[in-house]
Image 1 (cartoon, rainbow, N blue to C red):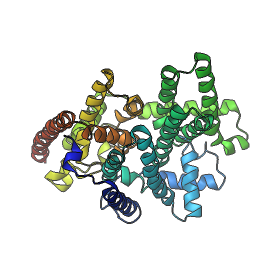
Image 2: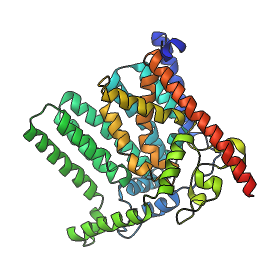
Image 3: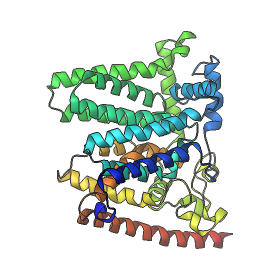
Image 4: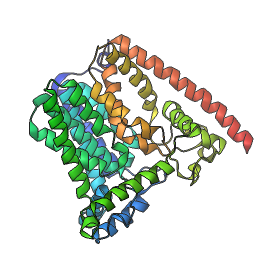
Length: 403
């Protein structure tokens, strides 16, 4: 018994109806539905920067702390489509198409693919980000595309897929550094796990790195045209690193909050009115809190949804099965592992945006397997949910007592 014994799947007719309904829903969610939730949004920084870049400003002059590629694309969307978020929505739609091909390439199972895309389309965080001018839009899309092209290369060993994978990875990293670990981990997996000769693997890695680095550096073309040297470029990258290192520091309270938020969908500092960073987290964080809107909000009303309680159990089950060599899902686990450093600094919910597709593929894979695996996942998720409710009620009492 698995989820398909509960949800009957009757060949072509059900597949067509499911696909059509899902397509209409995704289109409506991206282009028509306005979410009645208010969140901190970095687009107020990126849209002005994008417009300045299109007017010829140097990437070192405006919003220098992030690479410029995503901002150029935001500017192009604003100039050509008259809406800085329109290209984001289009890429949101394309991300589902690429994910469809990616999951079919991995498993060849239409039911599993549609289940994954359905769960992902119901995740308000995933959809919401693609309705903004955040840099995560482009970082996430190009990472999904990179993983797909990477798998195509592993399966077919054709050079064009390696070249496209490398270029797409350069675009992803050139959009935002938060995805920077995905590329080297996949490249390492290629070297270690493929059957190519060691010298050939090193050659492949060298070519790939050169292409990715070239694409990344191309985003700074205007910077070089204005007289900057390669040494200036290196200094700018070092300056960016120091900025992010000073801003995103690993502290026990921050890590504890991030893990609690991932596991239970609760923000500790909000319940206790903590201020852990500058500017205050309770002004910028993205989960609605109890003291503003009532008891139910501390559980699920916010970005993401109740299916987040499936994520950690699914990850643990998948790790165990991989260690026991019962399933080869190393690429998915590396995808998630590459996002852990930034997830532990989850000042805002969209830091986990890049990992959501991989999590939902794992969840759908387990739900599509036998009764035992589905039962284990649901039991662990129920325990997680019960902890969230119990802990949430306790925090609510403390919150209201402090008023």
